[in-house]
Image (cartoon, rainbow, N blue to C red):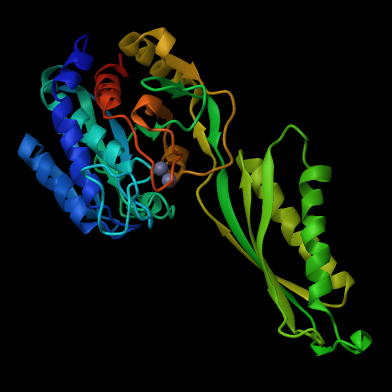
Length: 394
Ligand SMILES: [Zn+2]
Ligand SMILES: [Zn+2]
């Protein structure tokens, strides 16, 4: 294990090549047939034999089995891209109108690098490492699809690690590692509320039941759930992003709807906000002689890193890269990540892999048409995955 970072550096050209290939052929959402075929091809080429294809669609699960007994660690890498037209001008830029503008190409390449490193260490590897190559992170459907198709069984996964690359947190610079204990990212829920009234003439509101007034009242009252009912120290967001209703200046419509998102950092707050949202909209509608119909869709849960497990990872990362390279992330984000579905099932940690070299022009945020990451940091990612797999049970 001591030399794993050097070993990773010795295959840096290969890791970059995988990334560049994936970067040139981005695919969207659950539909990643070419990406998956390439992953399988490269895994087979390096000697991985136990590969399960078409998991939950185009997901891939691959096993590297150690020669010593032990538990199963999953290493999760997402592999989908975004509907963004690339403007980086890189020689390997995508030309198909889609773009790896979130670094998932790098995640997959670093995981492939880890598989290659582990194959050379099977004699000292305890247990099994299950690589999970997951499509559809961006629309948060992929993890759930793979779980529903049994990716966490055969063999049963005991713990899971994953990373996100780029410079997502200012305290995690290029070539550094960010860890966080507890909540890192938020639950992502979506709601649609349809206020139903009775249509009529704009000049005779007393003969109608006005769903627009209900909507306007509800949009403001919903904010009081956060400001008056939750602890000010318990972070939550409720955003109404869409209002739709009515066609004419002098007609009271039959209905009016709002659509929005709720973000929370722990399961009890999440349940509380949903319950209160339902109550507030029905009270508002009821108070105005109307009705509210609620459609509430729960997305990924909050991403919560297991404290003990994260401590083990933090100590390992410090040993591998030097304690000064390992930063503790101060604040979570209200953005979401569907790796949270896995981490709801088993302990694990999702860490940040700092990758952006401003001197190379890598100053653009994620999901920007000029987004890019620093390939020189890729061996670190592969070494973190592989080295941790070799030591986490000790
Ligand atoms: Zn993204
Ligand atoms: Zn991403």
